Image (cartoon, rainbow, N blue to C red; front, top):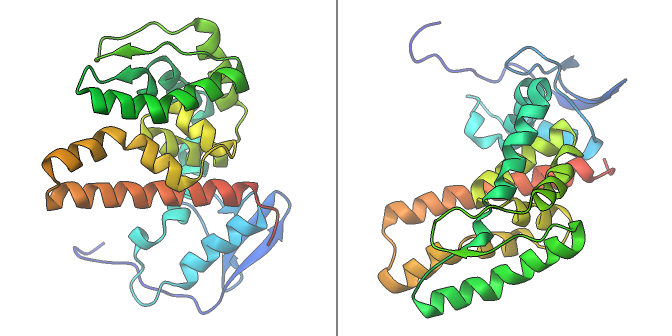
Length: 240
């Protein structure tokens, strides 16, 4: 492959085909393949249609950065499915050191803001999953009740590979297993999820301001979170 080579659109028609194990994205009637050469077959018609729309939107040069749903689908098939237990265990481990359990030692206003937004989430997890978690100040690790950690882990292991691919980003971006579960159980909207996860950063911004680099990093993270949330919703949608 020559240096500087980029893939270009080579198909005329983009569509979705019903197959035995789901919904395939097709280009001129041929099924799309993942980077690992697996068939790009999605679990719901709605997700397949959304992925197909990303392919249809490519004009001239193919730009993977404009295809977040396709990337997540590829990840689900090529990375998550072959090592599901390892990925699930990685995410479940966040229950032992969840963002919401580590509070600021000061100033008092920040600690109060954390308590205002984070305590209800921990209370929800305790009631919803019988998974109470302990809160500490600072960054010194706190040992969480093993039964609580296991109860949260059980929720992660119930997901399928496509759901887990989206869930991975929800957890990794926010740093909180509890918040990701709250979103996937319709306890939080994406906007609420982002705001609650950003308490510390937003506080610092109000005190010291933000530079352009921090603003851009936050924008990219929020965009990735929105894509993960959309992928999750499409995994659960049965509409075409």
